[in-house]
Picture 1 (tube, helix red, strand yellow):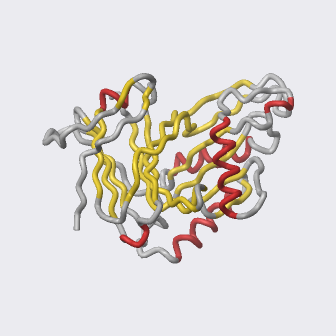
Picture 2 (tube, one colour):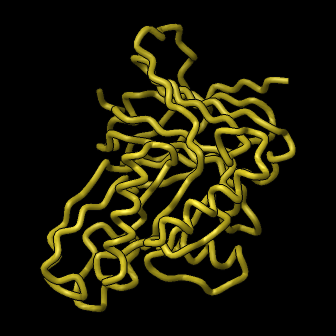
Amino acid sequence: MVARSTLLMSFALGTSLIMALPLTTKSAHAEMAGKPKAVVELFTSQGCSSCPPADKVVGDLVAEGEVLALTLPVDYWDYLGWRDTLGKPEHSERQRAYAKGRHDRNVYTPQAVVNGQVHVVGSRRARIDNSINQLQEGSSDASSSLPLDVTLVKSSEALTISVDGPGEAGKNTTIWLVFYDDEHTVNINRGENRGQKVTYHNVVRDMRPIGMWKGTKTEMVLPLSELSKSGYDNCAVIVQSTIKGNPGAILGAATLNGLSS
C-alpha cells in the first residue's frame, strides 16, 4: 500500500515558510542520490587536540563516497581558549541525547556515531569500518546497513523525498532534513590546536524535523526556491527512530548536492 502525500507542512527557513507543491512532471533535469552504506556522525571540536586525525578520517570517508559522513562540531570545549568557529549547541545536545538513549555517559571528542547506534573513537578508522560491517551483517540489503530506501529527486522546481521499506520500522520514526557545507578550512590561533590549519568535511549547519514516517511508502515535495534561500548548497535526509525523545537507530538516508544549481 502506498501512502503518497504532498507535503502539507510549514517550517521556518529564516522568515519563510515551505508550503506544499504539486508533484511535477518536469523530470528532464532530475538528479537522484544513491543509497549510502551507513551514516557516520563525527562529534568534533577545534579545541580538541585529539580531533584532527578524526577530521581527516571523515575527509577520507567523504572522498570514498560509500557512507554518508557528517561533521557535527560541538561547543563544550570553547572555554579552553579557542571558540569553535563551527560549533553549535544543538550538536552538543544531539550528542548528549545519543548518550542518554544508550543509557551511558559516553560524551567525548572525537566521537563517531554509526547509524545512531554504535559509538567509537572517531580517529580509529578500523573501528568505524568494523562497526559498519557488524551492522550490515543483519541487513537484508547486501549493499547497505540501512533498511529503508530514501530517494531524493531534484527537478527544476522541487525536491521530492521518497521513503519506503519494512513497515515494522515505522514506529516513532522522524524524517530529518540536514543542510551541510562541503568543507571549511580553519586556521586555529589559540587553544590545544594552536597554529594548526584543519579542514572539516560535510559540516552540518542546520538540522530540522520535517515529518514522520508511518511505515508505508511516503513522498514529500519541497519547493526548491525556498530551500535555496537557506544559503546551503547540499542537503541530506535522514530517517531515524526516536526512543523516549532521544535519537535512536538511523534507518535510511540519502544526500543531494547542488541545491542552488
